[in-house]
Image 1 (cartoon, protein in one colour):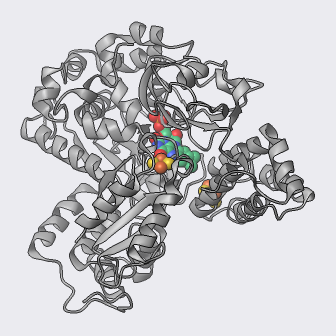
Image 2: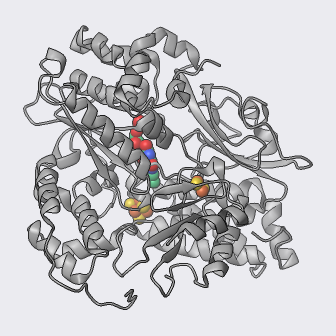
Length: 425
Length: 167
Ligand SMILES: Cc1cc2nc3c(=O)[nH]c(=O)nc-3n(C[C@H](O)[C@H](O)[C@H](O)COP(=O)(O)O)c2cc1C
Ligand code: SF4
Ligand code: FES
């Protein structure tokens, strides 16, 4: 397939302005400067570009919610906190093609009348941060950022703000709190960031890949973009394949490609390692419910994966593959430990519940639990779901619950045999 | 000399002239001072080595914040060192999916080579060993990060070669 989003990833020094421009960079911005300000959002809506940070909210619709013509400053916040286990795409956009992200930010600035963009980058991503800072410096030096950009009348700044190691800051309201210099604790919604966002001002929060796609939608046109994907899931996207496959890595695919192709095709995951069989697949990062190997004939997009009998999510398109050497109970226990550690602690069901879930799962995995505890586990998990401030609690409930639902025999076997029969890690 | 039990840093706590300039730049990025807390804590950590009580009090004073707020924020985020750390911080990813690809074996190997456990620092202050959650490189597992650089598809030989370069 033609590389569109990742076209520059293998171009030498595409992270510099001159190489980016040699490959068509900033043409879309110039095109937008020649368009009616109001024409960009309808184009995005028509393109069916969906947010790539996990929830798949339509980008054009989100932009349209921002109040128009107020006197208070408005902001774009780019979510570059990439931390969902199984996800490794935004880092490459920032390291190899940072100007595309910047171009998307400036287009948003012009279209929505924004004062500035803050890119909230995960603290661990040092090279990504350096590349973005260098890109921004080049843009100021050439008049593509700052006052009256290319004579368009637009004054716009971009700042990089480093996170400092807290998964929950990927949640958009926690991220906003963190950007304001506070602990990253999610806010109750409403009000939504479009109304009260960073510094109390209207704010659009979008993922790195979402914003990097904006110049491409402008370049190719909404019709082309929407034709690349499945219904209501426009454009190509980046899937990331990890775990027990022959060809782990990042691949650009049409939205709505079958999950089986992502895992088995020689163009992508390449199937199981020699002599092994696949047992389970997580379709979009560890907070998405796991599927069994017999459930892979489904479109990988935001809508099809939600339907029965799959009841999972496309999430960040981080596809994690487990084979028959992997103990799924141990995977669930490891994910529970992650959640317990990363809970921000505001809501009792999440803070306390995750501690219990993690302890019980460790005990089941080690073979020291009773049958009744397996049922109790499902009970606790179901009580976290729907009773918390942020979607973290729901994600916990859905993802841990799915291991119990999809692989009940594995849990029972651990309990009945009093041990785990899989090789140690 | 590396002292893992130090209670504060030695010497006066004042930003260097370069960092004073950097502070001015940082403050212009945000509509109010408090929002600069994370970048200023990073800057302080880089200059003083770790965020001692004295350093946090100094940051609080410079940003006109209560000391308790600075402590609360510094404690919430794992990348701020509230005690002295080694010159090189090795972070090994042990999240799902790295853990199925040998992430814990990497931790054990380094732990044996250096004679320290997770969260500990070698006696000479050379290396601190840490486990990390997903570092956004899952397709190249097992992997670690040291001094902001990724080392991917690790084998025992590659780990040993890397350890030998950390002085
Ligand atoms: C616990 C949690 C963690 C999240 N982590 C991230 C993240 O690391 N990166 C990201 O872009 N979105 C993350 N999100 C989703 C954001 O809250 C938000 O929906 C997204 O940034 C919106 O951008 P989009 O519409 O372009 O996808 C997370 C959500 C939750 C609940
Ligand atoms: S659900 Fe968990 S992470 Fe989200 S606000 Fe509540 S305690 Fe914090
Ligand atoms: S799980 Fe290790 S880098 Fe993602």
